[in-house]
Image 1 (cartoon, rainbow, N blue to C red):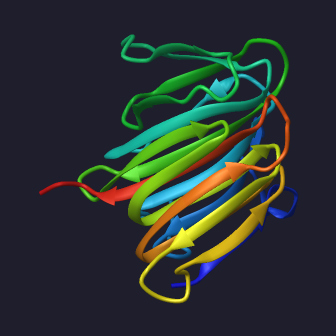
Image 2: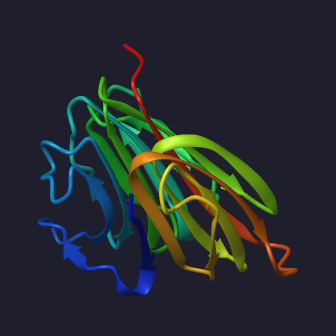
Length: 203
């Protein structure tokens, strides 16, 4: 099971059809799956203007503000009504909802996790100093601030490996079950790392 590394600055940018933003996909499964047939997908979006979010029937979403003034999320039926204005505080909502986003104070960047309902589910945690993650067949770690040392333990070549992640870099995996532990190796008081864990939906 290979571990894939990425740098935020090197992610490919795909402009939205409505011209209101840009999406940079980090990873999805199956590989190269389209928007209608992925099991899970992680991306970073730059929202540059007010507009409607795409509707994804049968998909669960988690959105997290990374930088910027944030966005007010609302749906006509009031199922979604949330001010995404505090960085690194995840908010979960259904992709079935027709959600409108109104910028609160200029443009912003958001971290997005989507999972196909009934196939898999996601757990997103924001880590601060030293943490251990439960084993999972797929997941992602991304250092937002600070420098982090990550040890991965799996059933193949990933077992016992150590990896250094600097700010705005990360790793992800899909396949054999992998466990990990990480710790911040500098004194940055605002150190933060995003940890996503995907597991199959219980039958």
